[in-house]
Length: 210
Image (cartoon, rainbow, N blue to C red; front, side, top):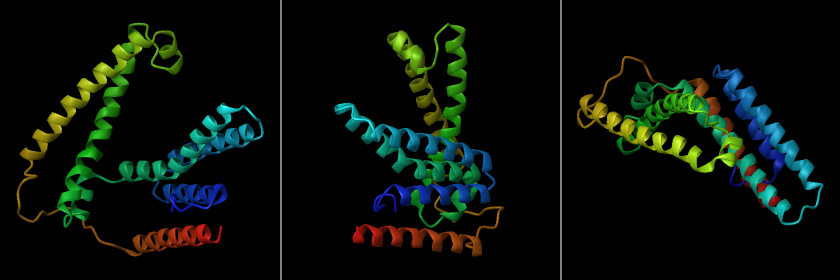
């Protein structure tokens, strides 16, 4: 739907639907925060569109175009990752083995890296290095050394640990998997699927009429 979106009003409507979906999933604070950032970004984009800055106008317009395209997708991804346990995901997609394993690892990988990111920022502040854009502009070499090197090493260690844990839990076992939770496609899922299909169809039709 984002790909076939006919313009900003339609994309804003999709963002509003994503916010409603997040609220229904119990992620009201996350949805409101993302919507506030989206509105701020769109306000800046509209204001900059009224000013002719030459090549900078093209640069800013391209950046905010990417932002407004990615924000609804990013909010939906954040809601899915934060509300779906790995065992629920594996059970729901048990018939799609080639898809479930990479996604299950990704869903477990992101929280682990986020936790390490917090530790790295604390260590940087103890050394007097600011993990911000201003700190990067003042001391780019030291910021890169203190930020990206430990982050990459941590990512490699987490990947190895997740691989070992997956093998230990029998991820290579060809036998059918079971789950304590009852997973089924209910009325709420059907309603969300219908709304998503309607949004996609509307985007395609409006794009064809534009």
